[in-house]
Every structure is written in C-alpha cells, then in structure tokens.
Image (tube, rainbow, N blue to C red; front, side, top):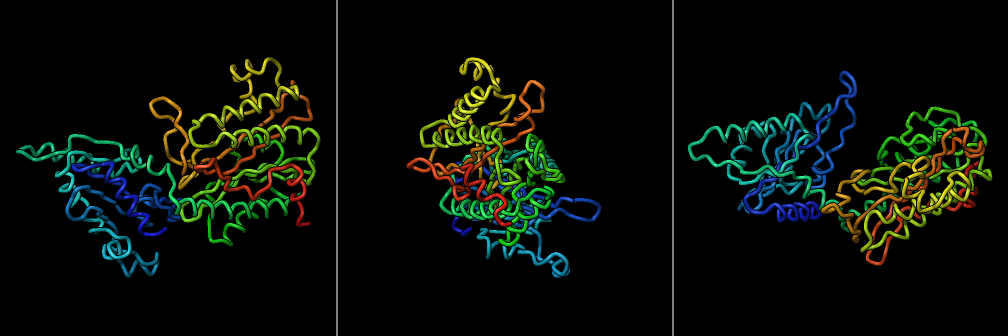
Amino acid sequence: MNPREFARRRRALMRMIGKGGVAILPAASITIRNRDVEYPFRQDSDFQYLTGFAEPDAVVVLVPGREQGEFLLFCRDRDPARALWDGPRAGPDGAVSDYAADAAFPFNDVDEILPDIIEQCDRVYYTMGLQTEFDAKLISWVTELRQRGGGTHTPDEFIALDHLLHDLRLYKSRSEISALKKSAKIAVGAHRRAMTHCRPGMYEYELEAEYIHEFRSHGVECAYQPIVGGGANGCTLHYIENNKLLEDGDLVLADVGCEYDYYASDITRTWPVNGQFSTAQRELYEVVLEAHDAAIAKLEPGRHWNEPHDAAVRAITRGLQQLGLLKGNLKTLIKEGKYRKFFMHRTGHWLGMDVHDVGDYKVSDQWRLLEPGMVMTVEPGIYVPDLRSIPKRYRNTGIRIEDDVLVTRAGNEVLTAALPVDPDEIEALAGSAG
C-alpha cells in the first residue's frame, strides 16, 4: 500500500476527531501458541489501516490541531542482538523515515510521554476491551491526572474510536479495491486447483492442501481457517476438522479465502466429489444458485443492506416449497421463518481487512443504504438435516455458493466472477486434472 494512502486515512480520521481530541491505538500483541512457541504475528487491522507498521509493542497517537507531532508512534528500539533471532526492527528513526511519523519514541517511554499529551486534550478516542493491559494503563493515567487537582487539565470524555474508524474502513479506496481484486484472483485460482484435483478417496485435508499450495505459491496465507466438508460435514457451517474421507456420490463444500496485503477474499463453492451431480443434488444446487443471483441483482447504490438477503430468502423458500421440503403459503413461510430450518445464516457480510469486516449494518435503527466502494459477500446456502421427515435423497446435503461483490456507481462488480457457479461448468471442472 502506498504511504500516501496511510497519510490520507490519518488525515480523514483527524478531521473527524477535531481539535481538542486525541486518538490512541495500541498494536496487536504477540500471542503464545504453547510454551515458547508463538503464533505468526498479524498486525491489528485498525493499527495497520492507519500506519502500515507491522510490528508488535507499538502505540499510534493522533493529535489533530497540534503544530508538531500530529502523528506520533511509540515502538520498540532497534536491537542488534534480537535482530539475530527475530530480524531487524524499524526503531523510532525508521518510524519517522519509513512510516512518515512526525515524531517517534521508544515504546518503554510511553508511560512518561503519553500522559502529558492526554493532559492537553479534552477528548480521548480509544476502544476499550481489545488490549486489556493497555486499557488499565490508560485508565490509571487519566485517574492520576484527575486526582492531582490544582488546575490540572483532564479530558472530559472517552469516546469509542472504532465508531469513527470503522466507518472510514467501510468505504474502500482504489488501492484497497486493487488489493481485494488481487486477493480474489489468487483465491479463484486456488479453488480451481482444488476442484480439478478432487476425486473420491481423497481426504478433506488433502483437498485443503491444494488451496494452501496455491496460496503459498503466491506468497499469501489463508484469511481464515479453511472449511472443507464432504457429505454431511457440509451441513456444519464452521466445520474445520477437515479429516474425513471424500466419498463417491457426495458433495464437498469448500469455504476458503486468502489474505493479500492485509485484504481478504472469501469464496465458497460446492461440487460433486465424483464430478457428477445427482438429480437431488442438482435440484438443491439450482435453488441456491437462484438465490445467489437474486441477491447479487439487489446490490446497487441506493438499496438497503437487507434487500439482497430478502431476495435470497424468497428464492430459497420458494425453491424448497417447490421441492416439497416446505409446505404452505410462500408469504407465511417467510414471515414465520420456516426456511431457517434449511437456511439459518445471513446472506452476506462486509469484506475488507477482516474477513467479517467492520462497519455498522444499521444507522439509526434503519438498514444502511449501499454506496459505491462498499464490498461484501453474497453467500446463500441450503443445509438439509438428517431427519426421517425429509426424503432420503436430500438428507445430509450442504450447499453454499459465495462470491465477493463490490458496489459500484453503475451497480456492482463480482470480484470472484472468474470462478464458475453454473452446475454444468462445475461438473466440467471437477476432477478434470485426472
């Protein structure tokens, strides 16, 4: 991401905060996996969004209206000894030269310097609950300032930073859209690879390995834990064991995406393990596909967030009614939520730096209107339980079709459109690697 992009974001946030406010945001911490083994470090999305600084033990401070030091960064000092083990650190000098900080200080000086900055401000913008250790520090500083008395200035308000910051993140810039498109392109290639290599007798983890191979060959990681569920496992929405045999005659549902330059893709496809849908499988698949297309058709500026979901619900309920899996009047079935027995989740979510990205879905208790630059998933599904009241040919069948969609001035752009959804094309692709 271009450094100018981060500067633009900081300026936009500081305009929203206004003179007299200070925004404080700590970086993500290193997380221990077990004993002395660490999980791979991934920067906090909000911190990354504002700085591009990918190190732990750091704090960004934004002070609008200040003559100097509007963008302050506390970070670890350079340490040649630790660099032998962990690699080089930017250090305060690098924070200024490489990340455009107006001033930077050693992380260990935060207790000495930051309270003095807070003392000069009327409002502190900070999100509690993400870094409990730093939360306690901040509260202690403000408490101490208030206890001093004697004319000491103290902030009058604590305001949640994420309310402003997450509204900014909801609208993607050209640079962000470019990263999302690249992420989508890599993920589409990974799905193609997995589909073409799929065959009966594989294990779910072997299919998962095809995705990981494609991701690592492009220098990216999974955006979330892959879901690769064959047969009845496709009915478990967040199935992650991925350790069962893929059987002839079953479907496999694969929900897998990658993260490119901190931006996520999120794609699901469902296909026959042996390359041929059964009649019942195709019937259900075509219902989900109709819902998928109906939802995407509602993604355009001026429509509200829930319209795609409403369209998907109507298509799925009607389809299940026509197959005899739901009985009754269509409007009544929708009103009473009878479809939730088979379709129990929302049709999509915001997409960006987090796979379930930030941003309010409602504004003043009303569904948010869609605007250009918003990016979301469309992912209707049908999950048929193993119940004696349901015809056997439909039981234990899970189907989901998920694409990533950008709202544009003219309507929308499906970022993952290069991956087929048509059942005939799916059959032609599945197992085609031989």
